[in-house]
Length: 231
Image (cartoon, rainbow, N blue to C red; front, side):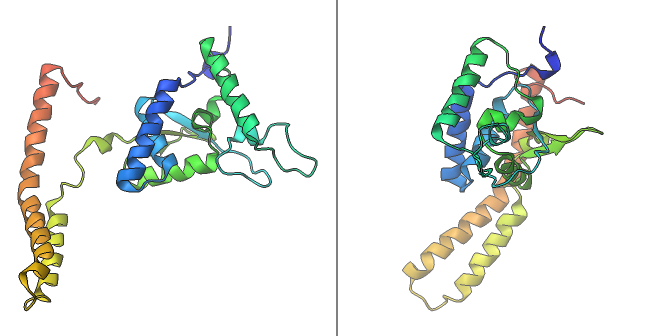
């Protein structure tokens, strides 16, 4: 019997495709680096929901985008430079898929995100830091462990960009700009006037919309359509 603590589920193609779709959407709409969006997509559907990144020991000539377990493989040149040929990466993907078809994997539990997304620890760490800065992901570490566990931040389910103070500030900035265009023709003032009006509209309506959402969410939880949060 394999050691169950070391057996992890290899992500199937559909999960990786979903992660790629999320990565492309966030890159297009929000300017996220592709890896950050892919990581977010993967964290939304991965099993278990907490994924690990280990303290990868330093090695010479690190190549971003190549997993630690590949860059530390025996396939190195005489001068210590690692091979990063497409064939190596293709072989790794093929190996993981073969293992996945058997329903088990012996991949190290300490490098789950690097191995799942075929990326170096530095690339994953950078993506995690970006998601942390947006309040989307979080890292935890148990006492004595040499690895972080990365998961979605539960607080991220709260409505974002609904702070009326931000929109009030926007409106004030736009009004300040309009003060500089007092004598300008209407067509010159029109963009700022519309932006100021929109900001004031959002500042007024969004707090009420958040209250409506909370009431609707509570109704869905009461009916069982949404799970109740854990205590």
